[in-house]
Amino acid sequence: MPKLKTKSGAKKRFSLTSTGKVKGNPAFLSHNLRKRSQKMKRQARGTMILNESDAKIVKQFIPYA
Image (cartoon, rainbow, N blue to C red; front, side, top):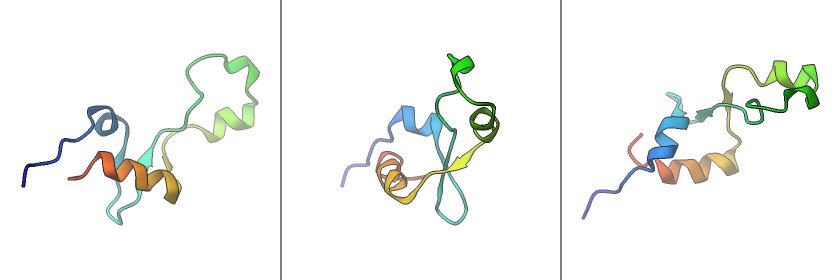
């Protein structure tokens, strides 16, 4: 069988934890920040664990992670 290719955009943006959950960065922090509440900006710092329906899609993009 041929090897599967990893989506290069996904390997730059997501990583897997040791338990198999997908870790990524929250969205909406690049511009137009004056519209966003301080609470939203504060909670979007650092990384987050993707929910299971999104993680299933990402795991198809990074088959060997």
